[in-house]
Length: 221
Image (tube, rainbow, N blue to C red; front, side, top):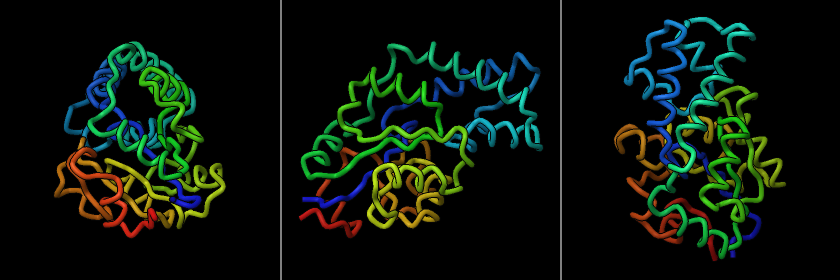
């Protein structure tokens, strides 16, 4: 049994493929404000919170009023676009179920607002697998480790007893800065770009849970 070991799941691009819905909602929101937004820029910023995305686009920290306006418009659009369309990525359900049987404490640790996490977890029927759903949209954005450290604290685990499942470069760095190992899934970045992770898979169904944990040095006995 995994004795008091945590698995912290990023949501967008790890549990569910949300990239196109995020791009379309960002494109429309920023277009209404006269701010150009290209797909290449979106790909480079995917996984960061809205504050950091806006700061990068504007090349300055966004004013509080602007950030609130963009947050409300963009996230409302996102939830409307993805409602009824979300599907878990390959291997997700099998991994969640196997980890639960092994005794792992699992949590969502996402930069998304709580409303997005609740919507997607419930639409996918995944809530029973998670001991916590942690939103990082009001915390310092990845690669800052704040979200992962908060999630470990909520689970009552030290960081060294947690594994992060991520898809972004910022997320991998955040996991390591938190003192956690990181499994990266190449859903939004090519395998070759994710080399800083402790293990990289093209898809979760590429490898069984026990084999992956063994490669990561996690005792599942």
